[in-house]
Length: 204
Image 1 (cartoon, rainbow, N blue to C red):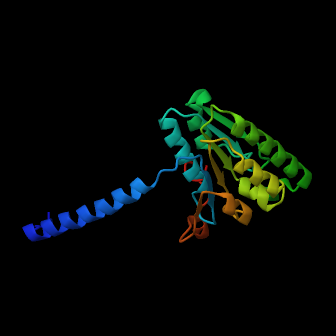
Image 2 (cartoon, rainbow, N blue to C red):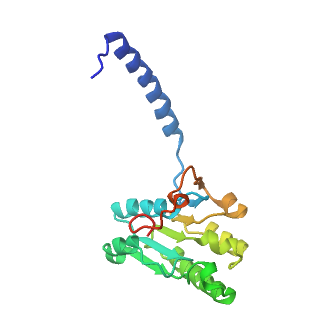
Image 3 (cartoon, helix red, strand yellow):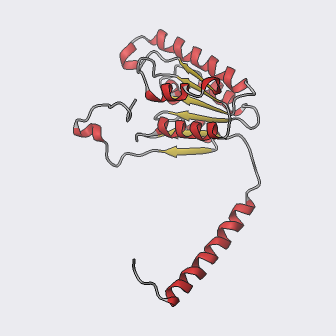
């Protein structure tokens, strides 16, 4: 361990005391408590993973969580199996037909998205649910499978105290504007570019 003399220790203590005072004052200014509309977007990996981390946090407090997957339909995922262990505290609906380049059927994609949005509205209206994850909703909006204005209006009209997380690349500007929190996940380095395939426990 590096030796620390008394002067360094005192300087550090004084610096941290000032920092604590600033932090405490900033925290004290925050008085609003509300249900948040959160958007995880961008080309980087981790948008859905972050949403499910938030779901796990909610479950840790005894809350109930709803999940609607708009695009992913054919993949068997570890997170779905893991959340099944929470029983009826997690309401999970995989409504997608697979990625659009797989289905190659516009009518089918639109019908699947509309059914998923109807299910999302049910969860949004359910007072027992504290968090709703709308996985890949941004993709459905990007391809105009759903009416953007109606979706944004539905999200903004969420009941008081409900948190909603929307994931997927290319979030529409209107959704970004309506959101309380937007995280743009970038790519610094990705293993796919080195020829590494999607792997169990990492991608699904």
